[in-house]
Image (cartoon, rainbow, N blue to C red; front, side, top):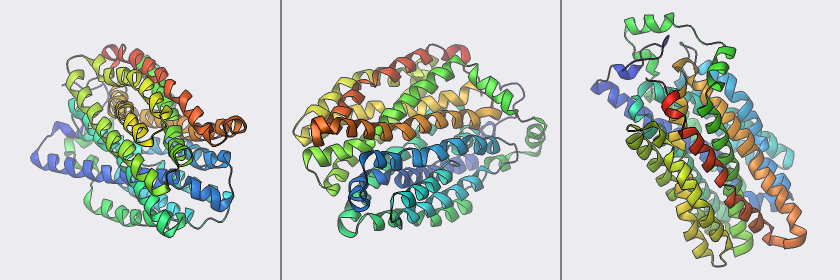
Length: 438
């Protein structure tokens, strides 16, 4: 195996039994952290209707709370934090632990809000904390796991998205029906403070495992400037296509995750508990399966031909679009839920392959920044605009369609999934020429 010029030998070069155990521990801990990340981020979706009623909010305000109030600060702070994570002497474990403590505390504070602005400020705090998690985690994984297993490892970490969303839906729905939405937010926020301490005790920074010779080599490598890192990242056409594909995927995914729940409550008459449990099957189980499957398929078939790392996301999203439309069209909510399962599996398969490709398209000194730029776009466009614009469209259609306005917004969202399918396919054609070794 060769390494990019100017890059230090990564830790996986010394693949001992001890390091293998440490890597497994690292992956499991990072998965748990990411579960908390999305549990705290997405629980607002299942609590949207009771929050709206209690604080007298509009759909547009709900969209602002679920989207821009969180996403703008998350996205903007992600890049400078990633620059820090890429520094040779940065301790990424401490960074993730501190971030976890901040977003967990602010999630609990959300439960104390008495009006729209107080809740918006608390959501901003959640976004500030969560900005330090994923770029550093991707960098940790890429430094510790061999390239041929990278998509599976990142996909394993990415399972925190559907699992965290599942737990948020179930816990939020059940606790809200019994104790109210404020207790639900406090209940999911406070345990993260304990996990932050556990993380520091059990997980070690992989950079500290290097031998003295490797450390000397690593210290001799100069970090890339912002200009150099940006040049390397944005001269990759594959990266640009992936950036577009993942951003549109996030836009549709975050929009649908919030408003599909409201759709089942409004159009099908489900309670928050019923909607939470029903959607947990779709977003949680199906999403976790799709995320895991995407990483496995990418590692297996990508080893033969780099193009096939992105074949499943490209083909899967094209297949998912018409099935998703049928799911929103059906009047029986049981049939509707069943029809959402396969599209959720297929639409979730992009995570591991996409971020594994990103880690392979640039040198190690730019990996966290490359991931953070993609997350910046995903969260600013996806989380920042998806729930908000879906809400604006719902409000604009309400005079014509009443409570069914959300259904018509989701009709359009289903077929917009063909856009990321196209760009995943375009990116796949560039991988063989642009992917780096190591």
